[in-house]
Length: 87
Image (tube, rainbow, N blue to C red; front, side, top):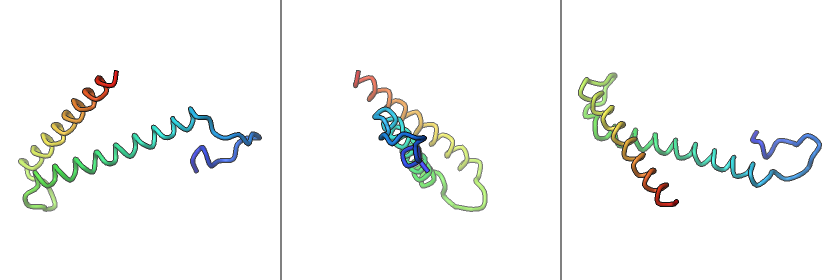
């Protein structure tokens, strides 16, 4: 049960705007992280895994590692550019 649907201790007031915003930001961050991981998995798998099997070859493992590193780096660059332009 989330913090907004739990009964309050003696108070019937609505959650504060700040509480709502904190929960909304948390949920958005979680959704973004899940989407990010799914995108990285899909793109890097398609690019690096040529013959799916029970284990990765050395070249597939290296490719996956480089792909994930590049994707994380690119996302960081984009995020910094977006946040710095908002100021």
